[in-house]
Image (cartoon, rainbow, N blue to C red; front, side, top):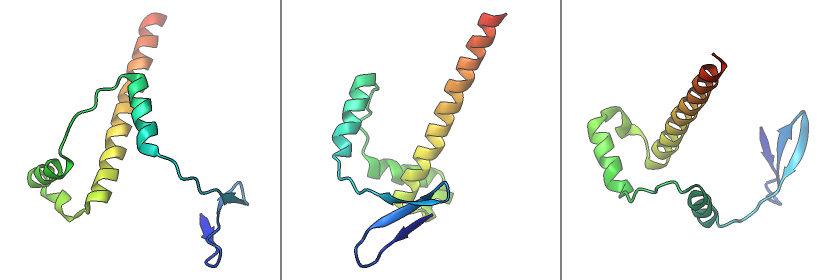
Length: 100
């Protein structure tokens, strides 16, 4: 839960039943993200997002009603969840094999 003072613009979030101030920080997240990707040597695909979203919506008409920003957020959620689940299960199976 969040609350914001309309006059000052200050905002707070409810944490452990206490209102804690939120500190606004402007960072160059693109540069930070690129550094993190580079550190892990994760390949970055050069994709034209607009044309890819058009094609995705053509193939799956249910997606046509979603604005781009909502669709991109949902893609991140679904993809990251699946990647993390697969990594976890892979690690679990490897540990099980070592134990037997």
